[in-house]
Image (cartoon, rainbow, N blue to C red; front, side):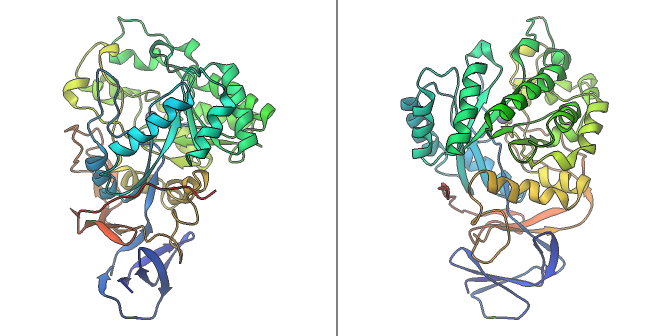
Length: 432
Ligand SMILES: [Zn+2]
């Protein structure tokens, strides 16, 4: 054996086991209470050993034209590993046809080359100018099994028309891929140039999200397609889906949410530095936040939508002059585990692996799987430091359940005793 992690409390299929975890050639080779020789012994006494987290929604080095997210693949992946994450799924830039898809894929692979943990990408389509079936076939031939589209951002040309979304959902059934949708009804969004950041909840109201979720679920029912709604921000949206489409949830319609929507309410916009909290969709009212929290069981996955910008770029009154986005990848697990306990684990590992065709390799502590694990010291505290290149974090002071001590990806340290180590991440091919 190359490594043995001994004496830890190992999380296996929903409960903890006092067992040693043996690693050989990057894989989990054996789980046993017996002691066997290994080249390196890691003592995890008093520590928990969790499966490495998968973040399905990350925007490293995102080029928005005027702005560019500051945590790139090299740096952001170290932040991720500090938070127990061993796999990220980022996005290809939006394209209109299959030739550009190919180019976007090559470009992003190049940009991600120095990622320290494993990674892959969702494709992104905008106002398509091609035969959609040909596009989907090309995408699948590249090994990409998830395609994102927007029902908003008409002004920047990113919006996909409803008729084309219907066709994409039909194709998702035929070819068994997942359509990721940023679901806000553009018709309910107002972008008055006089709006300040305090108007963000009014600019992108809950109704935009809830009504679009309703329309999309109806189409999913008609087409039998597979839809994944990214960053659900309001408990109202989940209430509507539960009430009207209970049969679709977690079968054809999957809900992702992000830490900020559980942790904050719109009172943050009255704070002196309220502009720091701007993201899309926005942070909602306390009623909607607590409703979201009460519906955690209907949230299938937790992603961060990590998209960090420096405070200096966000420090504007005018809403249209600032980049929208927050970064939480370093703290997401600490805060969500504190709030919800063990039920967040599947939502941050296995559920994501299954939807993204990387199960069998990622998302569990199991013999034969990649040795992606993190060692966790369960000591209650608060988020007290942050390493994002944004140079600020809205999460400082949030209660947390403990700290990541070490993170291993395919059996190699990415974080060792809270220090970053050099590790080369791999582009993940899917198993289909
Ligand atoms: Zn996003």
